[in-house]
Length: 210
Image 1 (cartoon, rainbow, N blue to C red):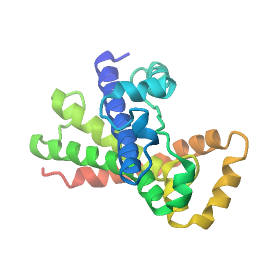
Image 2: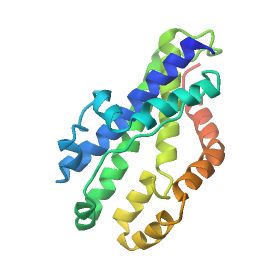
Image 3: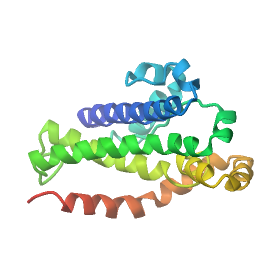
Image 4: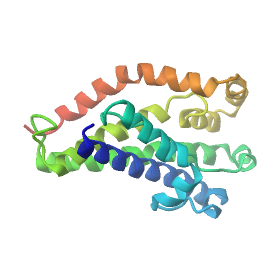
């Protein structure tokens, strides 16, 4: 176990998930749904998010770190919302769904900016702590953004499509009603996500100055 890398990856995941869910909650609040606000989710303090989803934000990440020797860390969280509000205001609900991935894109952009000014190291091991943090945040938040924008329930992409095209709700409801559909979506997305993420990451890194 590479403990230094494990702590870095775990901390980056907690921050990234917190920003993701806080953005969902903030967009919902701005759109008129106070459900997440009333449960304390409109905050960058990770504790309310951990208290709401301890398995997805602590247990699963630690298990994945242990299983991969500190190389990989996965997790999830969930900000509550009012489905009646979403049905009445589908476009606001679409914005709420998109807000989480947009928060991850913002974190990825900040990490990219850090690498722009500090330089891209030849290897992760030779990088400074700041460069390692920036690279982990860049990779992790690109992953979270792309993964969550997949248009299949329960991912945010389905919420975006449902909000912009309410008639698609019947299809998504039918998929969600299939037993273990969420697990199947997660496994399939995890299997093929690298085919999109790896080329995208390389394209982003090529934008950095030599």
